[in-house]
Image (cartoon, rainbow, N blue to C red; front, side, top):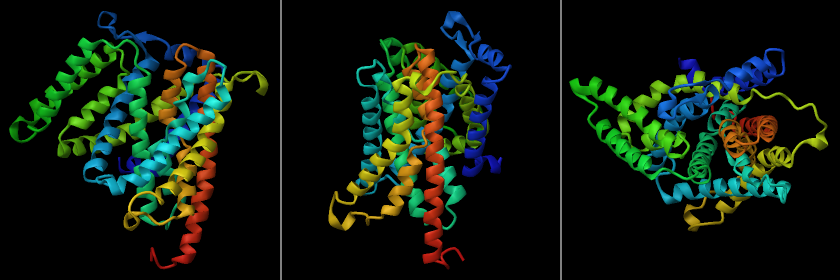
Length: 385
């Protein structure tokens, strides 16, 4: 279990699962796997007759977003983002890291009818970015990891807002109201998790979590938002214990399974000129748009706020974080599925673009981290002695 908690191992497993899915989808077993992914299971009477791929992206991924929400709350309350002065710099970098790739994408798709895909290249995969930093960044100061973590957490907050606002259609207000009640009860019960009543209260909380997910799913809001809401209201101490227990399952099963499922795409046998503008927009916006946006936002953040609290300009660190920020992967794949849900051909091209764009960012980020780490070790030979 300790190995699966490792950022390096998590990134490797995630990449391996995506590669395996893409490879198998283009072999003779590909049609059978794609058919299995689209097989519907679940009670239709409860509006839960979902394809297996839907159970993965809407169901299992809610657990991942629960963990993200707990991490987000921790950083905003007692972590690296617990004050305006701490949060301002990574927040500016995160905002421009969302705006610039969205604009790059829209420039590629202007007038084509694919503008709805603008959220796809705006995401950063925390696990993958931190994994690449851990693999190649031996000797780097912890402040760089802290800045990357803060930026990625804020980036995830933006992604959550985008999913909740832009991918919600005709919400059922009754279901949402009931979900608010179940979330409130979940949060209240989490504060009673102690002593002899811990086991029955825990069981009741699990039932409330499942009911919340079902209500949010039925409301028209993307079901992963249920995981976010539950993670934000759960009492801090039990939430940290639960996420510690869930982390190996998320790293070793949930995220790889989602990556495998999302990457089950038959590579189109068409020329480069026949690929949609959405493909090119995502492919360029992820590694290039993110790089430009985060670099500019990181620099601008050193010019904003009281002079005494401004961080020192460290161009090398900004460039490294900006390169890693282009690793969209998990959340970008989810955004792609939501944005092009009704257009399978463009959705498949978008998946390939996310994988290729993220791969470019992985290579660029790995090189940037390696160069900076070597430079830092030469300048501080006894820092890690």
